[in-house]
Amino acid sequence: MKFSVRLMAVLGLATLLVSAAPAAIAAGPGLDDPAKKDHAMQIVSSAENSSLNWRAQFGYIEDIGDGRGYTGGIIGFTSGTHDMLELVERYADAKPGNVLAKYLPALRAVDGSDSHEGLDPGYPGDWRAAANDQTFRDLQESERDRVYFNPSVSRAKQDGLRALGQFAYYDAAVVHGYEGLQAIRDRALGRAASPAQGGDETAYLQAFLDERVIEMKKEAAHEDTSRIDTAQRVWLNDGNLDLNTPLRWKVYGDSYSIG
Image 1: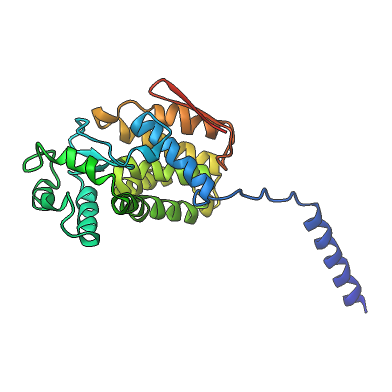
Image 2 (image 1 turned 180 degrees about the horizontal axis):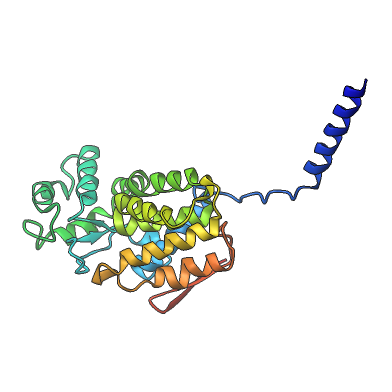
């Protein structure tokens, strides 16, 4: 009888403590939510193309002098870092004899360099022509998701990050490749625990962005870190971990907004 009374008292105290505990803040939709994903594409496009209209960038192509050869398309596929080659290979598989297929030998030869050998003078014009083909546009989106968006968002979710952290990972992968993202993440984890490890999300993301800035400044083409300083860092300092609209930011001194 005494045991039952004591047990009931303990259970009652436990119930009281649980009910008194502060409620956890529910996370908003992740970056893979369709609306959030579109916002992410707009934010990246503001940095990559100085425009929120990312769907207008399928035909974009130029050499920006970053040592990666030609940069083209909605995510900045490059002839020097293999992702442009993979895209054109998939396009050739989907539509044999397309306008870019004839450049595959040259793309394989220049992969890993900034060379245009075998690509000039016709490749940029043919890329822009291919961008009128819905198949090529669809492949750009699917390759963006396969190589950059999906693995970055998945990794961020495993680390316990909400939409802003998921975007920070994705944007890092866009600029530095997924392996580059992993290297930045590893260094950040040496400075702060991730939420999945019991750490504070804001403190971890501050460490991640610090390491991202260090990585960007290693290359002259990326020494302007405004896509971090006057965009992602602003939202983080404002506590907007769910990347909710309205969003206001600047890149290279230009102002943008969503919502």
